[in-house]
Length: 335
Image (cartoon, rainbow, N blue to C red; front, side, top):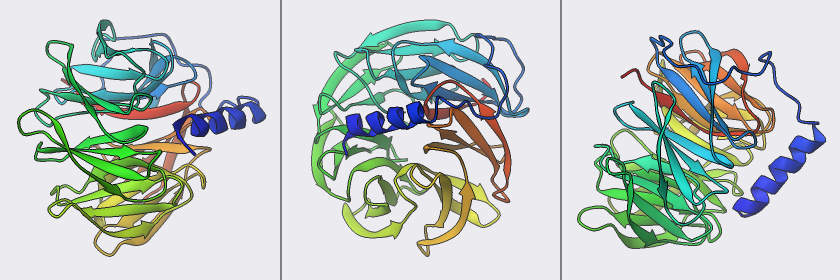
């Protein structure tokens, strides 16, 4: 199942469900800036609504929406928290917004649709997967311009920079591989190798010594030694694992995985590679992002909502209605 087939399946499920809106009450208000958010904000890319929803982490309230271009797929905060960047699945440009005022600051033409995106740790480069073109776009965010493009495998999706900033990992969903792009000097493709069925997203442990890749159609997590660039094993996951993130909790730093097919989040101990806990989420559980205040937010694409979880206990705190088909999400710290 490639990227297009995945989204066709999602939209059919939404139609069958009658576009059921999840608990969360009325539609969120139009863009509202200037609100004090002491614990920061969560922003979700609502692909079916052409909006970004804004959530106050402290109050668990959706308090604003930001209009975007066609089919916003992922959203990411700049490392300094001053800007948010949005990929557009049906446009040939990226959008950048002021994280405080929500005003659009500009666009960057990259010549094709975009999927996922990630900043270098120092914020000087932004890397964007272009699944339809089998490319990764390299952006200068300060100048808001395209620097270059690097060819990778077929239908790239997930992108993540290793914590030391020296390499970019890219999942190639249509050929079951991951590509590694060297970032020292001019970005260049260095190696690609097989990981699992339909690799979707990638993340690193805090040390950067190990990478974890969700195999969407393999119901597993691939484990990669970043020093040797070799696959060292797999971890069983729920059905159709999507985004994954490391979260600090009472049991240490654990891997949280949003499983689209089983509508739940799995917490995995990366050391033992064993399941610690399963937490119910919503239909099409997709994105998972922690906050410094001890909460984890999960987008539920089919249910049009976000599940809020207490990281320490794994207890579901609440569910918030957002725009249609929320996909990627990001934590935005206070500037």
